[in-house]
Image (cartoon, rainbow, N blue to C red; front, top):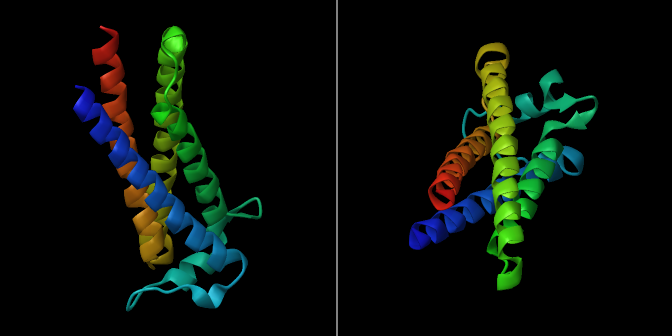
Length: 157
């Protein structure tokens, strides 16, 4: 199980870094250099980024995504840190809480991404490949977090 756990942690880390890179790029193009936004042929990245749905209370969605991925990455770091054996029970509880919080954040991010993808498809009728990539990444993170929750159950019993 340890080898599988390491594999899940590694894949999770790769996904979180990937999501962070996409969110950084989208935040940069939204806040500083709109012309740097590169979208595939026939893509509607600019239309999506300029729509009324691209911000919440004046905060760009890309910036919210950036904070989400930074938080998930921040929660991931204690999972890979070595903790002295005398703190093992504390580490076990901390790890369990971190997995639960990561699961809830990934669930919220996935639900919101589904909503935004629906807006792209049915309201704007335009697709932003970067937004779709972020939706796929957060959905994959959710799947990994579900696997992590199963690992909690298997190690605690």
